Image 1 (tube, rainbow, N blue to C red):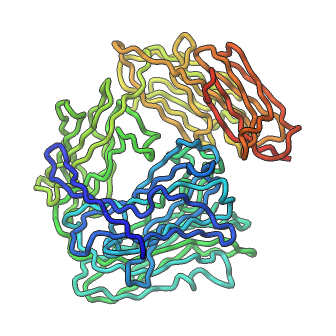
Image 2: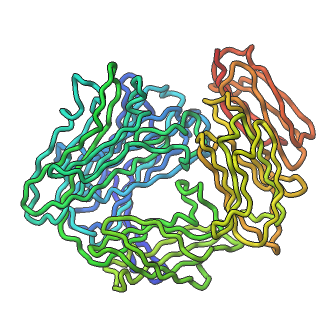
Length: 636
């Protein structure tokens, strides 16, 4: 007998007097331990579930994906950036649909308590996410499956209510790994034109496509080369896209591998957000859809474009005026928004126009729970099915953690057709409070020309800035800035997209950033492996006492070495510090121990060249507590 995972029906009460919504969750994989099958390069985890019945009206479906380090048999987080697929096969159907695609992170740095969450809108697959179905989580790759893996949760969140438009049919038009650059097997012969005919009730359609580039030829294709793609409807190009993604600002950072390198429409540690293109189909009418890649040939091809694409037919849009609050980006505690939070500045929200009329005005009410709401009369122009980011005009600040609320009303001055998705909440966390006199401590690496940094106020005016031309290599720069009461942002940019330290570019050296008080005590210390940029929002409040960053700061460089290793330690208070070199696969095997009494700060060098060439951990204990653990790759 097959195991059926039922859905849980939850009533969600919305504050701000919003229209109540019913939400259910179907969890197909609940903390499932996922490992590779090196014999095949792919491992399948199939679960039978019971989705909502076909008679239930569904407003929205989100897929929530959670990764954690496994807590089984001493396993640790997996190492490699592999492609994972989440596929659904409805009962009685011989068609399988890829509803989501995940690129796993480089997990070698992650500790046992690590956890990260992503989400993607899968509402377009509503017709197949009904009744009994099989959900298959497919994990690819070849790494060791005894000592490393992931703990994965796949959660389908259903919001019930009137759909934006009724989905009538889902047509799978492409699904496979398509060779790219091979003149003997041109990709356009594989991605041939598809002919379809709409049903009698179709008002419009949508092309939905997951596409990522993989493989490595002499030009770096398909993973590390930028190529364009055209979507063609009835012979005309309706969408042109460069299949390239910047990875240096990934919210999941740092990672153990080459996470900063830009890639062909994906990054390590990324749940793919599929491309969606509206096409103007007519009812009961034949049409064609084609996907054309940029012409490309190479002598020894090895690139592949991994594509799954669909055409979804829809009925009439159900409302003229219908706005949706998609997300609250600031303030937020979501991991995907971690680079922007916490904040004491202007809130930032994402909205979507689900009405047939362009959205030109609306009223946004917002604020912290228990306080008088603020009101913003927004004006602009958002077409149907389009998203927009909106910065709200008044800052949010409280001394306590609380609930931030947003409510949207009167789209185009009219009553919203579906008020249930007009409200939302997030968790507000208080930003750091700093003194009026602040010291920026910035130690450059060997590439200071890549760096600049500044402090700006809430209006975007730069109170202090330092350009790359003012920085010298391997030099400590100290700047004292006097600030008045208010909300600020400290920003560091790196044009090399590799922060002040990156293991793969060890020749560029290592830098260090701290914000100090005038007594030289740390207010905030930053990891140097930050990629493209780092941000810190903070406030200056004369009547509030600021707190020090009393956690010891430790950095190790380089992590890939022939033997020499440097450890940088900084703390506001003295401690007994113990440094250990241990075997990665058996941490009970201690190779070196160094003890430092009454240590506050210092720079220490070690030579591990005598050890066997393999991987180790460097662990640092302060007063008996583990404060740092990082992997060392000892190479020839």
